[in-house]
Structure formats: C-alpha cells, structure tokens
Image (tube, rainbow, N blue to C red; front, side, top):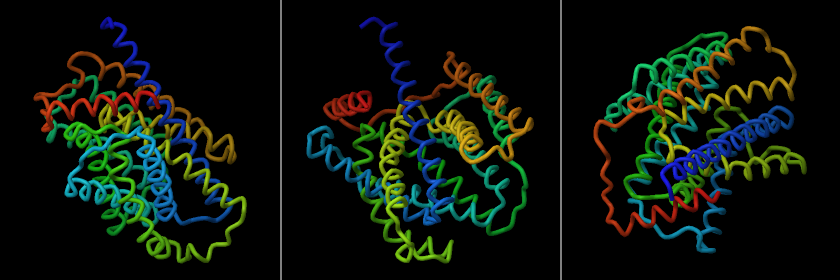
Length: 335
C-alpha cells in the first residue's frame, strides 16, 4: 500500500474512532441525566459498576467467539490501573458533591496540564509553541462557557486533587499498558473490566448511600427506569471501548483536549432537550473559542515538531507478541 494510502486510511480510522467516542460519550451523558433527573436514580458509583459488568460480559462473549486472543497483564499492573480508575470515578463524584459546580469544572480543566506534565516527565514529550497556545485557548473557551460560581473548601479541594491526578494517571496508564504489553483495546478491557466491575459493585452501594443517604436496594424500580439503566449499560460498552481505542491511537493529552468537544455537544444537547436556560452570548462565545482552540490543536500537534518524543519507547515483549498487537489493532479498526 502506498504511503499516501496508508496515511489516508489512518486518518479515516482516527476520525472514526473519535466519532465513536463522541457519540457514545454524549449519548451516555444524556441517558444518565434523564435517568437521574427524571427517575431519581442517583446511584452513580453503582451504575458505573453495572457499566463495567456489562462490558465484562461483552469481552467474555468475544473471547468465547475467538475475537479476543489470550494476552498477559501482570497482576501488579492490573491492580495499579484499577486503583487509579476507581479513585478517578469516586473522586469525581465526591468532588462534585463537596465543591461548587464552577470549581468542579476548573478541576476537570486542570486534567489537561496534569496530563501534559505526565507526558513530559514520563514519556519525554516535547510540545511546540503553537501546540501549547492551542491547549491554552481550549482551556479558556471551555472555562468561559462552563465555569460560573467558584467556591472551594479544604475537603472539596482534596477530593478534586485526588480526582484530577487519578484520572490523569488512569488515562496515561491506558496508553502505557497498550504499548508496553502489546495489548489492543479489547485485550486491555478484558483484563481490567472484571476487576473494576466487582470492586465497584461491592463498594458502590455503600459509597452511594454515604453520598445520597439513599439505598440502591430500596429504589422504586419501574419498567422505564430499568430500560434506561439497560440502555445506559449498553452504551457504556461503546464508551469504555472507544476510550481505550482513542487513547491507544492518540495520547491522554489529545484525548483530553479533543474531549472537550463532547463538553460543547453536551451543553448544546442539554439546551435542546432540557430547556434553554443558561444559553446566552457568554456561553456561545466560550464554545466558539474552545472549538477554534481544538482545530488549532489538531493542526499544530500534527505538524513536524508539534508534539514529539525526545526518546522512543521500547516494548519489553518479544516479536511474536507484537503480532498479537497487530491482530488486536485490526480488531480495534474493525469496530
């Protein structure tokens, strides 16, 4: 295949992977918002456990059908990943509970500079001036359209600090583990989803009771609410998988920067489906600034020297295991 054809194929697959993540992420946010706002199902941690349980079932079926090949991930690496991921989930929920919405949004925005720091320190990544400025423009735009009241307290700050660092480490680790152990997205999900599901379903009801003072077993389940929960779990399979595919194809920083497109879409869809309260010139201006920053970032980071390693990562696996990565990568592409 000619180099230009390979580049076009990669660009098409990158765009498809990104659209897959955008559609599933925005979809699950809208469904969860309707589930919690309209049907009072406020058990976020338990719901996340159900998401990973459904994802585990999907990976089990694919293994039985032979679509996922056997792979190896050391238990120590698996436990570290699950620790980061679960602290991210719980930390975000607690941060939203203890902080104002404005400070919560600021904390979410700070994930980008933290992810940049991790890539610079751990991967020896270098960013061009334009790439840095485009990231700042994205942060400014999202801050303009999402940050309103800002108040902070000690325990809220600690929760936000834990949430930000654990999320950044979890997303960095997705990329790191896929490279180091030659794992495709399906393989990595097959290792991590069962452990996350069991731990969150075990601890989730207690954490949700602590945060909401309501018991998940005492919730008044109806046919419609169960259908919404099932829909949320089904979409979560795509959300979890597409996150791993995107971070594997790009990096945690690119995933965070371009991920704010989902923030913009959620705001727009929220105004369309849940009322136009809060939609004003201030918000529209912020959206436009953020979108310009994302376009600039995509252009700047793709140029030579826009974003590059100072040293190259060397996989520890043997050549025959790299063939497994090719198979897994092909499966990711087919999704």
